[in-house]
Image (cartoon, rainbow over all chains, first blue to last red; front, top):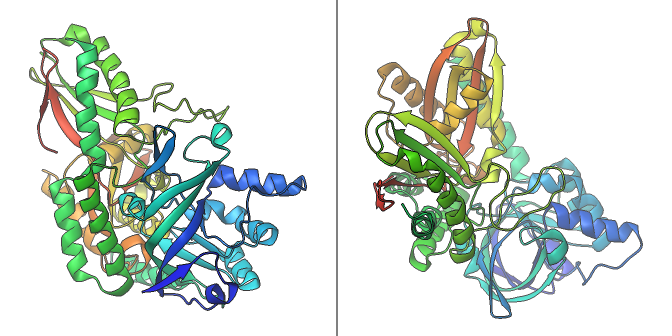
Length: 196
Length: 291
């Protein structure tokens, strides 16, 4: 299985194709609804993001964390439903240049078009497999907006080793297995309804 | 009855609920894994690995440890019936302790201010559903249901004339439109009749039955079986990547309805179909009773 290292090389990301499994080693950051709002709000005010968001995958995730002495540990960290971020990612790519989004359930046409424009991919990590993900975390490097947003919504910067398997489900050529499967499901549904 | 001791003891079943899966669910996932290929198999392998790690390392399988919910079956002749307030208090404290000790994710947010108290409690939460039954026992099931699956719930006030065919149509259309969002393979709960709120509550209660256990009424059992088979022909597959296994099961519960209304409640449960069941003795001891 292909292992991508961060900082990500744009040409490596743009080369990923749907149905390709891969893993990530290096740094990733979590961001869900409130974190997206927060970061885009900063950009609107002309302020900088707390770190360079372009070279690291954005993971749609609200983890369970534990603090031992002064150090945070990831207890369980599976993906959240990505479609809630559909209203953000086009602008997010535009503002911050982020190339890989990891989540579950797939994203829509606006994101698909933005992935083509920015040479990015969307990859799915198995929903619910939070304990598996936690095993790939080597270190919690940093956390942003913890006080303001709370544990699930804060931006956690994680050092990971072979985080995955991640499955590319939307790529930079505009392919989306979510779109293909939707069509297939619709035709299967019609067959079932006709035989009720 | 000592509520502090009961609260301490409750951490055990809450921990077990979020770190392990009931045997019938696990068996169904393993069976599904054998049937699937390619991307679908990758998903099920990751699922089974996550379950194994959760159990071995005693950490939550999924980071979404749900809204704390207790389903209580209270025997009308339960000897400690005058101490239900203490039990309620213990549920609340038990959830607070579990949040720290397991740990589980603080999942209660005020709907207006957006504030999260950080201990999994809030107005009416933990939610406790009280049903009065015969006998002297107090039986509890802790059902931590995640947000991703709950967001796919649907209430339809169906035109009664559409009848049972209309119900089948609604359920299949819903399962098709949810795609990968509720973390399939799911267990889909369906509640028929009652009122708007009753049908939704029946749908959720149906999830308390173990995977593969059919309804005692043969007509309902047939409906469950047909919906399960048809749902698995839809091709949603594990985590929506396509495949043979869209649902692990479909459960149906029903109540009588108003002649002019046919409420159909649907709520899916993700593959992490977690729960624990236990009895609370009149002395306040916990006795596990399977799930």
